[in-house]
Length: 425
Image 1: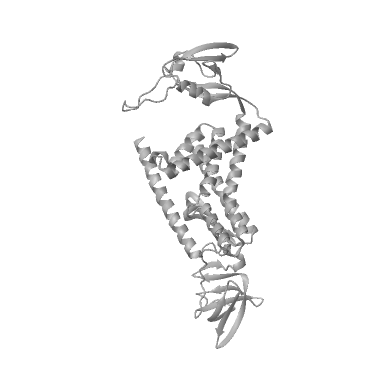
Image 2: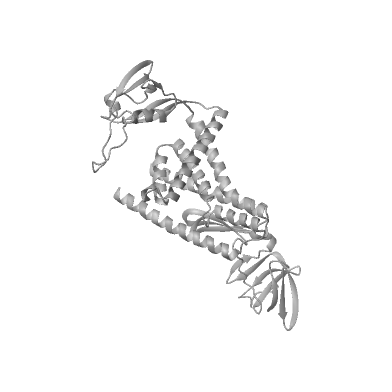
């Protein structure tokens, strides 16, 4: 039952992170008047799909992302060309459907050979009907139908490329912004749930560890170490412990109503091959004694978490650029799910904080200038603003395709490494 609950939490977390990101793109695209053809969660084969209005909503097999497919984001492929025989369905003298095939038996259809067609600017189609050339106006939301598949036409004023630089930039930027907002809200919820730290205290104490041998117990509050007040600075306590490999650390603790002094000698552990020593440690987990946060404190705590985690994420990306990392430092979908399951088993508060971190990571990662990511699309928009004219859509699409392929190869390599790591334990 617990495994099922953790599984549901993981699926829900990824669903919310991806959906909110894509909703940011979707919302501002609709506000700009862009035709959104598909709003998809996941990649690969469709599991569920339905169409409402102009947009098809789909849930796909691979839960590794999502997309908001906008008309004109890639070059439009027209299904109607000069010399082709088509069937037209009219409503009040306007074309509402253009059938590329299978129209012979349809009632009330005008059939003819296409002499001229423009489905982007002037919105018309000219047919040769029984030797007579007739020009038909086309409705802005007309559908082309080929092999039973309906595709709505996209006039230039409904295409992504037909909008201003500002409208397109806002549409692309909105996805990461939604993840940043979600991260802040989740950090805020975590602050209210966990409270404001007032003192460092001991969590679990390992059996036969230096802390256990010195008489330290779970719940002991640490006032000072080697005469230095600790307060809520757990990092300071860790540095004092790691800086005392050869001398005991003098602790002043509070246990209930008593204040006690304990001397703890940190130890080093050898690696499995006996060649490398770990940092000095005492064998305990550090936690915090907390109190309920005020609204102001919760917002301040959320902001501090945001800034700290942003710095850590950027440090991680810097290591990727400089090559200062190992393959095991990276985690793909399998590794992320594995760690998320561990966090979820620790409780709802850690899960909320981890979800906030992932949402922030998703926002920052998407803003990197890597082809196929939002950051790369913003770079192209910026180049267009500087040049005064857009980049060739075919070239831009090719760049994004190559980038997407490289990201998928990296994803496969990292996932393979995750699986090997699981097998090896």
